[in-house]
Structures are given as structure tokens and as C-alpha cells.
Length: 245
Image (tube, rainbow, N blue to C red; front, side, top):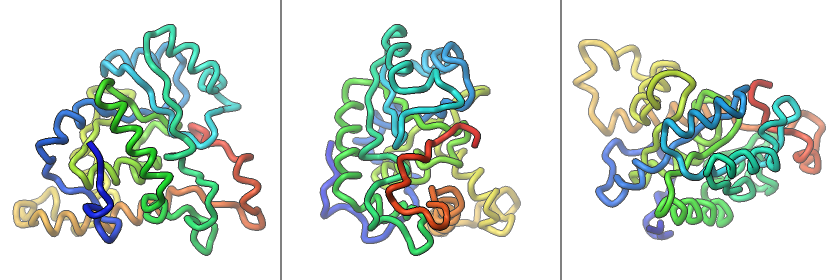
């Protein structure tokens, strides 16, 4: 399955709640996960519970000083022992791109601009190819998917085309995209408290989509990587995507 340039929207919108029939199978095969401060044993257990067969590492720098079990070499070795394939997509889908054109005037990554680049779209195509033969977990650092570009940038792009992954958490069953979006709307204050009240049924799909656009954009602005003041793009490689820093 491929996304043609002619089918892409003109603006960076929030996802539709109606999965396309052709995407249902791919949705069922796609998860996200944050390595957080897990032991490698707990991480592998979470993957097994979700029946994941491949991990797509979307960290720009696949290393962690605080949690060395998730350095690329160590992680790849342990995944192989557990029968899980390792795929590195950090160059294409990482949250700290090296292209200055996708940063705003404050040195912050603009996820909408990233999503329009050829490199990002190449990464999406690679992911879709892997989904044809694997159950894939997009992996970054943070435990909460709403704190991470894997959701705010990558999954937002996929969901526009009807692919709505589940999010592996360190408790209970994986969180669905719908549940995650409900949480995002509640946390953001969009809807003025109507979403869970008596007037929830009066919110149309179009109104919900518009609220999600605003909520996703606001959350992305809060969570996107930003270069520290006075630091140029040559410093990007010095900043690692820690689980809790």
C-alpha cells in the first residue's frame, strides 16, 4: 500500500475516526511502545503480550546513557534472542531531523513540515512494507505516547490515511487511538467539557476532527524537540531522546 502525493491533504490535519477498509489489517498489525526505564526482560514481555514480531526504532539517536540496555547494539542483540526483528527508521522518522528547514524560528521541530518531506514519506513507505509481513511496534523513549513524536508526528500521519495503531502501555491492555485521542482532548481542554457530558452526542465527527487538529498541534508544540538557545544544528547529535529526562 502506498500514499500517493495527490491523495495527501493540503494541511496537517488530525486523523479521521473512520478506518479505511484497506487499512484495517495494517492497523491491527501496528503498535507503538516507549522503552522508558524498563528492564530488557520487561520490555520483551510487553512485546510478547502484543505479539510483536518487529521493532521499528524511530529514535534519531538510538542510544541511552541512562538505560544502556536500549543502546542500539544491545537492543538489537536482545531482540534477536527473543525472535524479534530490529528495524532502524530514525533517519527517516526521528524526532530530531537534521534538516534546518523543518525547524521554526524558535528552533523547534515543526512536525507538519517534517511530514511533508520526501525523507519522512520514504520512512512511511518502508514501514508500510514491513507491516505487510510483520506486527510492528514503533519504538521511542517515553512511556506515554502523548509525550512522543511517534504519536504526534508519525501516527498522526498514518491515521490521516486510516491506519490507527494501538499503544503498548505498562499497565493493562494496549491503548487504542480513539482512547488516546479522548485523553488528548480532555487534557487539552478542547470541547469545553462537553466530551464526557450530556452534550457529547451533539458533537459531530467534523467538530471532533477540528478539535483534534487544535489539540494535536498544541501538544506537538509542547513536546517537540527544541534546540537550546545559542545552539546550532551541529549540536543535534549531542541530544539524546531519554526516557525520562
